[in-house]
Image (cartoon, rainbow, N blue to C red; front, side, top):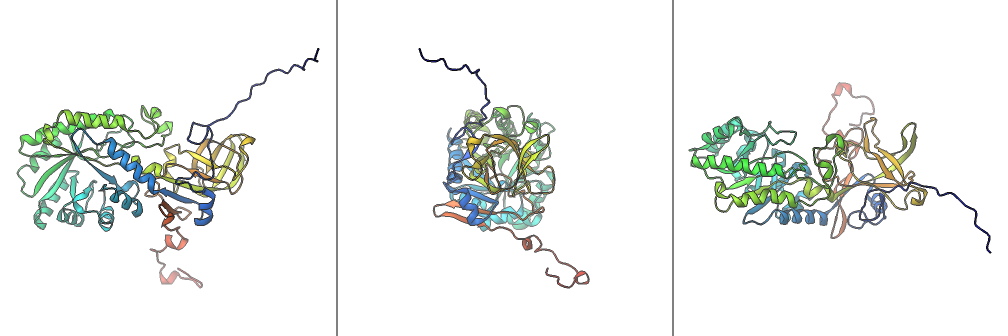
Length: 460
């Protein structure tokens, strides 16, 4: 009879895993899976760290998927890419090549769109402030100008008379959307009669052609029903317009569609925790079906304009950064400092960006995963790119990849303490620099020092 094995009591060991991803159950990337199949370590060795990486193919795929999702039901859908979301010229050029119009909110963005070859009639000019010079150019060239208030309405009429053109206009309408933040700063209120008054002022004006009614009902909306309420509000205003002899043919519902990023709980609206991924079918149904059921207010063949930003660019851009220090912080646990901070990823204040360590560049995954806080290099305690994210052991030099940074990172970035990174686009010919890395002289290029303050060795 064989000897009995010594009894050993069972032990339970917690296995730390992250959310299901396309590679494995933990936040570790094979080295070749940076968007476009490029090695993160190779990219930073070639172009420096930190480094923004844009996938041209992903941009095109996201835009086409958005267009297909919001097409059908006998409507003519126009996609006007939101320049403020990310106005890197190369990204805007890709959008234009894919047939997107330009949605701009300043003369600067308008000039960029025209410089990139976007025809003026394919530009939607939004925003609460447009200078007279900007209005003269936009109206003279035939852009669609969405009017934000009564003062601007009077200014547009005056400019149209002075340049001898009929202005293509829309009226921005606001209503109580009940999505926590009602955007009452913008447009003409339905509830307080401003929309009706604006229509009355437009009626009979020979130099004003009311083409569109516009609404933008928030940002990172996770409730498709908000868009249905917006459609119905605009249909109500359109009926009033027709009673006054006006004939709007375009419904402009703005943007505000969510991306793959997840809001931090402190900022999440009800339902945000349920949102994951980029499928927008429910949003399309919420818009297209009520428009198809009641076309009369906008004529037999209405045009739908949508102004997506984050939904078509966020997940097409990543930031590759490098660990520059490792720490064990008393009462908190493991932490790393990387060479990119909230100065270039300001959205880290609002979103839990997915963060991956590149496999083989630091410790062995077999050594166990830990909750790690990822700090940036700035001299601020609030410079936190991600709080308590599951990562493997890391050492100085380990590349990290921060995902979904295409929206509002570059356009809201600042040169606080550190210059901003280079940006490369992965295209058919591999990575190409579309914005060079800033140097310290770039930051001070617009500055001057009075002669009386110059010292020996002055180099500015």
